[in-house]
Image 1 (cartoon, each protein chain N blue to C red):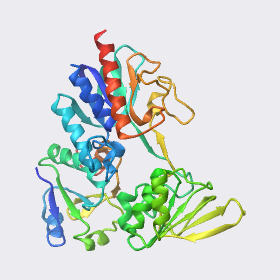
Image 2 (image 1 turned 180 degrees about the vertical axis):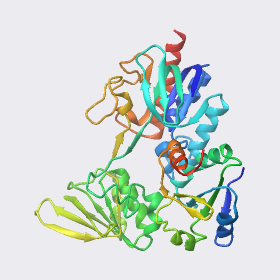
Image 3 (image 1 turned 120 degrees about the vertical axis):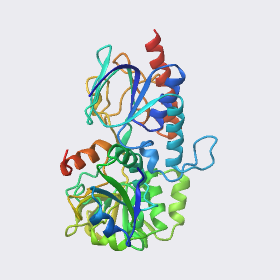
Image 4 (image 1 turned 90 degrees about the vertical axis):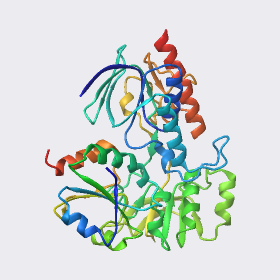
Length: 108
Length: 307
């Protein structure tokens, strides 16, 4: 499963119309810490096929979205279910930390 | 989850030391698993420009780390993205438990977990991480475009952070608690030639001030005893690193700073447990010395497995 790229135009539709929970990473091409999340997001995307969709928002292209969701540090992760999101995860240090955060929000 | 396989070697940490160890281990015929908590590279992954790895004039740290990982995996090393929470190395078959619930066994362990940035130890420092406090200028610098920032420290990394920020920010204060910098001369010369960098010597940061986020530093001029506030938008802490060695307590000798005491052969006091890279006490911590450690440790591990 590929990681979708979302922007101002398709973000709202993606988080409200989707049947599956959406894991969104707010990121930017210049963020050197953010790229450390890419293997984790690829793995989560593959492992959660049919259960969760992974997507990214480039805050340079969608500054309004970052502001709307209070993102002042990247990488910030938000999990959306039916258009609503729970607590943010900022700059996680490990894959297990991301999984634990997801498990608190996702039904088994 | 329990994996019945007994690996010849399990490598903990996926920086240059870990992947170099993995490459040498698979080439020595060892069944090899490398465990990394997030992504290949460790500290190297957030380095933007590497210009001192022999044979490569200039490369992005992330690309170099990816290349190291790909080479080790292509050679036959297995890779697991998980965090080790427990290491029992004293028995002949070593046991490794992870946050993801894995229980792994190995004949040898190469511990290469590296080091992480040291904290100032001030109230609010952790809470305001991302709200004005940062440990990586190349990561967070652009959030402070056109603003005033401070860098705490006086070594090479502090100088590099200040120089990086000087290209983005309006003004950069470099705050050092001593009267001379430890940074190498070429870096000190660059600092002196950069108009928007101001070095504040003999000064301690006493408190982080602000409402909900950092807006000023409480500074103490140690020579005059004068205490004052310096308004800033961001603070980049670059006061050195601290080794990640808690898992090795009672299994390897640690010095007062937590670095592992092991010779150039990378052996610890526990048979079959080796250390490599920045976590080992040594005079120079560079990508090339980490990679060298990995090679030595893997060769020693191979000797232990085949004996």
